[in-house]
Amino acid sequence: MYAADDFGLTAERVDLTTQDGLRLVAYEVRRPNPKAVIIFLSGIQNPSVTAFFGHARWLAGHGYASLLLEMRAHGESEGDLICLGYREHLDVRAAVDYLRASSAYDGVPIVVYGLSMGGATAINAAGQIPEIAGVISMSAFSSWPDVFADNMALQGAPAWLAAAEKPFVAAYMALRFGPTNAGITPARQIARLGDRPALLIHSRGDSQVPFASFERLVARAPGHVETWVVEGDRHLIIDIDDYEHPERAHDYAATILGFLERHWGGE
Image (cartoon, rainbow, N blue to C red; front, side):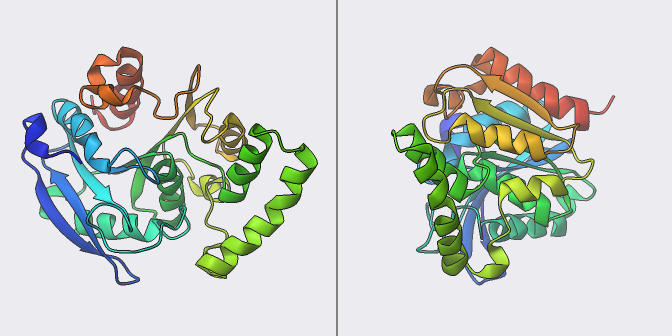
């Protein structure tokens, strides 16, 4: 866990309530007249979303406000079940509703920026929430059955066995999270982007979410979706120490800021 003042920032703690009744905690970093407001989401375990305070500081200097959202069953947010992206779009919905109700963000575009399961949730949320203007998704899985089977194969299981497990995993997900949520997977939701901008980032040797997930997402994405592939096994894309100062990871910073400025930077 990090604190905003570790980064020379002032952040307001925000309490949100989801449509299914969970209380979530988020941290808002405001900026006067923002070009866009960015909702940050992290992964299943590490790092905490508070690691993105470094991003919030960096992007505030370029005109962007931020909301760091602790999804259900993370940090101080309520919930005893991590839902692997199937229900976390409800968490983003609560954050979007909060921003839309604030006069500070009247007419300001909302961009969702997620890592790992947060990247998958960012795509799912965009598919479900038309008010989202754009997506930055890093190291996202195409679906939980996909990443389950891909990791079986990565660990040496025969390809036929890994493929045979998929329908059983999918059936369990539908049973666990409800049939109405069974279709809320990044591989399906990315097709609902329409003409909204999106940037997909993945490392070719990712040992947590294998590159096959990225390839599936790209195959199903609208043609305008932008991509950036990093070599090696870099699930976090940059070193965790660089999360404190992402501007020091020059290629990363140029890719992220270039994407934001092209679409929401104005003239």
